[in-house]
Each structure stands twice: as C-alpha cells, then as structure tokens.
Image (cartoon, rainbow, N blue to C red; front, side, top):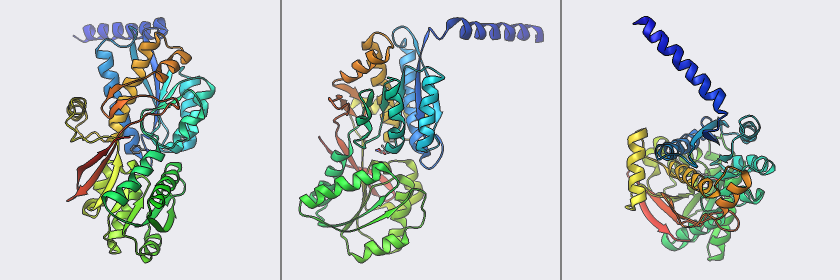
Length: 377
Ligand code: PHE
C-alpha cells in the first residue's frame, strides 16, 4: 500500500513537472489581478476576488477561452497605492500576464494605470469611479459608472427625493474618490438651489470624528453627505448618532461592504447609499449570480463581488473576440464591448473607456439593507 501510493506520488510529481516545464504555459492564458486582500479596505479586494474566481471557474468549466484555460494570478496591494504599483509591475514583468483586473479604490487604480499603459497591457477596473482613472491611457478601462454621474444623482436624490435643501459634507482628503465625489455632489446640489452649509475633512484611518461632527452639527444641516469608505463611514454615522444628529446620512458606493452594518448596526438606520446593483433585483442574471455566489462562498455578494464577476466575463469575452492574446488586440476588443449582459446591468464601453450604467440606491432599515430605487443614466 505504502509503495503503491509512493509510486503514485512520484508519477504525479513527474506529471506536474512535465505539465509546467514542457507546456510553457501554452495551454493557459495568464490574467493578473491586484487588489486589497488585506488592509483598511480588505472586503473590497476579497469580494472582487471571489466574484472573479467564480467567473474564471465558470469560463474554464465551459471550455476556457480560445481553447485555453484562464489562470488567475493574484497580488495583494494591502490597500496601499504604492503597493498597487509594485503589484502590477510584478504581474507584467515577472509573470507576463496578458491583461490585468483591478482595482476597486480609485487611488490604487490611479497608481497602477500608468504602468499598465506603459507596457500596453489592458487594465480593467471593476469598480473605480473617479474620472481620472481611464484618462491615464487607451489601455485603461472600467465596467462601472463614473463619479460625475454618481455625485450628480446623489445630489438630486437628496434634493428631490428626500426634499432637503441644507446639507453638510464630511470627506476623506487622502482619497481621490472621496474628494472628487464631494465636489461633484456639491456642484449639482448647489445648481439645484441647495446650500452646502458646512464641510469638514478627515483622513483614512482616523477613528474619532467628534470634532468635525460637532462643527457640522452647529451649521444645522437637514442631511449629511459622507463620501468615503465603509469603515470610516460606519464610525462617522455611529458617532453622529451619539451626538444626537438624527438626520438622514447619505454615502456613495464606498459604503458597500458587509462590515458597514457589522460596525454601524442600528445607528445605520435612516442612511442611504448608492451602489451598482441590488441582490433583491429579480433580473435573471442577478438571481442566478446571487444563488451561485452564495452557495460557493456562503456570503451575500456585495457590489464588488458582482463587478469583479462582470469585469472577468467582459475581459474573457474580449479575448475571445480578439482571437489572440496580443495586448493591442485585447484592447481593441474591450473598446468594442457593447450591450454585454452583466449582473450589474447592460454594459457598453464608451469612447472614453467608461461604462454607462444605472445607479442603485439602498437604504438601511432596522439594521438591514433595503432596495430604494434605480436611476438610469
Ligand atoms: N468607487 C470607489 C472608488 O472609486 C470604490 C468602490 C466601488 C467601493 C464599489 C465600493 C463599491 O474608489
């Protein structure tokens, strides 16, 4: 018995060595992924990775792409822009990947995009919404909407749907996404006739927001806008409630994480935030994704999970249409993506390599998420 399994093990080792050495990866297409698997926004990277894994598994089970299997190589950027740049450099120069998926956070996509552009390796961001990201070059794409749209729609939502005219803003000055979204929100809110009666700032990693909140409260706002990421978002809402600021608080897509309610709990009631899809959507693509994802990972798929999945499928579709894995050919095929049925809606890549998509607004009632409305572009 021992000898038998010994022989099997030796045979297996030989096969693995032959498979890797002899194949020269000719039977696989290498795709790089960089994301925040650890650090301040770890759920962004983890959820995206799960969504992408599902897309890779499904694609490979259905025969792969151009007769080859997709192999995903993942680099953790620890939620840091410098590490994002290092990660894509490694994926391109050491691993020789044919295309790259990442990042969620705009600051990290902004750090990595110039490198992908320089090496002419297509980069597809699942979820970075800052407009500057795809301006880094013609190899840089995204499969989500952008912040001028998100900011405008949130301002309209606060002014028209909620009916508030006096708002305050609390933004993260170290975060390109937060700074941009605050600016786009303010532009629309003021053009509609509203007033931003006070604005305050924090930096990612802060945990005490009482001084800023006290100053904002003194301006007597009807509602507060907090464009930032989920950990600070939840802490800000909690501390605002402790200061007896009971008004509606509105966030952007950076709030979408299972940690939001874990950290914020009941304090999150009477908040609203924009995101990219709702798990309650009855569309066939959403139902099937939510079922498959929940069964595979035993968790609710948040927006990044859905966007990671869509980014993967769009990239694999483009490689198929390109007919080969040359960077420029994949780039051209990505640019031609039109009416792709994704979980997060129908996806068409425009001439600026952005996607026009509906925005979904969720609200929190009794410490759980509720679908509020969808806004078409
Ligand atoms: N849009 C955010 C950014 O650009 C990232 C994000 C997307 C976060 C989707 C959560 C959900 O930084």
